Image (cartoon, rainbow, N blue to C red; front, side, top):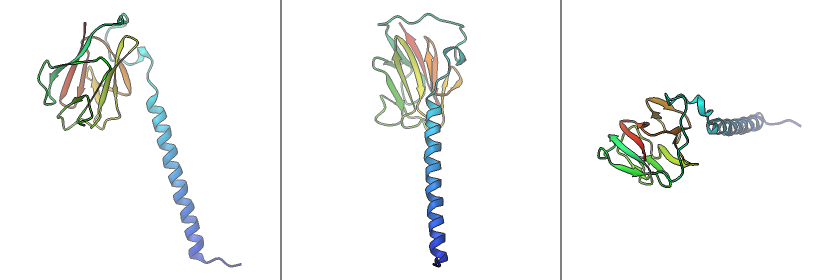
Amino acid sequence: MAYDPISVALKFGFLAVLYLFLLVIARSAFKDLRRTTSPAPDATGFHSAPGFAEAPGGVDAWLVVERGGGLERDQRFDLIGGLSIGRSKDSDVQIEDRYASGLHARVFERGGRYFVEDMNSTNGTLLNGATLKGEAELIDGDTVQIGDTEFRLEVQ
């Protein structure tokens, strides 16, 4: 029972491609799992104040434009229901910034507190000048920078 050498090579080649495909899928899944973990509340390092009171329910909050993005300075975006920011027409706040991704970041409310999350953008998001990984809590006066566009959180 002799096998054709080309047939054997094709079988091994198919197995190699199959294992490579499974390796890429597994690596992608582990990468997604690592990305969803968030740091402990006191380990973010984004706020200089050691602690702050939890925002009471029913407060109004806005994202105010500081500069850039083809938006007017002091333009306000209400955070009721959250906002997505990016270059895409599907974003709630569409910005014209060459460093912004289509869906770059989102700002949302959870339990009376506000958070910003980088949506795995190519160039990243800065919170108070520090690189944001995943999501972090926002407090009044925090700045969120996407490329050359900068926003400030205003809570009343």
